[in-house]
Length: 340
View 1: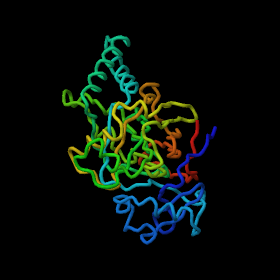
View 2: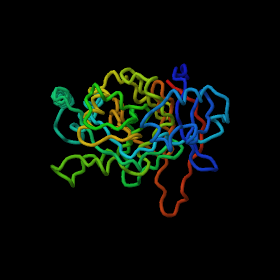
View 3: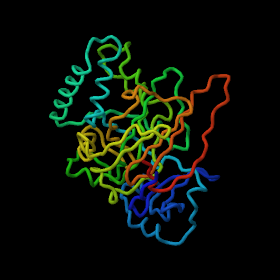
View 4: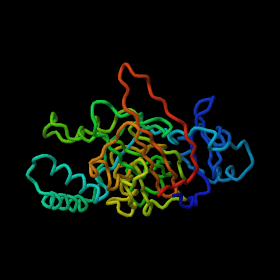
């Protein structure tokens, strides 16, 4: 069913048309194209550096060349130069994954023992005071207008719906108390992961292979909206994902081990965060590894987060050399559509 629309008065989005990709301001079920003059900046990232949302709010309530969202094809609402990803940041999720990994095959470890080990490890990590962050590739960021192509080398591709912060003013070595001022807005990201490549046998004690497991083309479906930070409380948002209409993930960001401010601050201690960069906050429980159900050709992932709208990702198998290339089917969006 469809619940109430979010109370954000407007958002940003990018859409495809005959002219290419155009930035627009969204209000309700309409979108208005934005050029540099209306934006007051050369491009999206230049705007986010100052994030003069009042300027866009005025445009969102003015007459102009409005178009119906149903008449355009939305794509990723951001153009990040860097993607920072927080891992192991929902306690229940981490325990689920750890138990599934430790009890796979003939490991000899009972589910009770595995859960006890995972809970101890999570307690130790929460007490360490530092979020675990790794790097994603910005070229993996796509809109849900593109199909998710499932690489043929594995049958264990998994979903991870996440709240993502979009950086505004550059942030370098900021404190958690300062971090909120450097977040321009929020969007939805599904961090797709090939599970059997996370801990491949050929790397041994070297640990996790985040590069191969998370960076196939299109593995970061993003958007379709960028909602201004003033209209979002990142500490209490519902994160909800359906696979073919069945609920698989349903949690609150209140369960985050480390909040957005802590993650942004931690990431900024190592590298300067730039306008438009994405900072993912981790995924809640309910991934495919928990359900023992991984993505297949024809699957549809419907992900929503309170105030941020809904993304619909369609999965297709990687075509063989003799098969025609699959094409995406455009589908309309409404700001704040949330399905339960």
